[in-house]
Image (cartoon, rainbow, N blue to C red; front, side, top):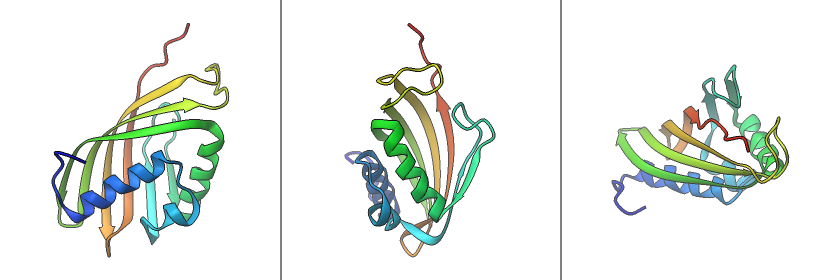
Length: 139
């Protein structure tokens, strides 16, 4: 990504988000994670109670996401690294493949996300997401 600092963990974090944008699942996605990885998504509009996932649950969620979203895009706007820690500022958009609640298929969801990653051996050991979804506009 042009303009982002060239730190190996930032480069991995950006490649990870690009892979998720492409719809990576299974081994293609798992290669970014340490086998002991834990992902924490703090309460937000889609997960009001938040969610904590181990690596198998992360991979299952990616598979389910392919059924819900026809496409998604992550734009990493800012990144900083210190040691094995990376903080990212990300804009996410996702187009619904199926209705979600009262939102129709084709609706575009948007969120600004703060992502904090901890790396071990060049792979993601911990991921903490703070997702701020835009209020959907109803037509």
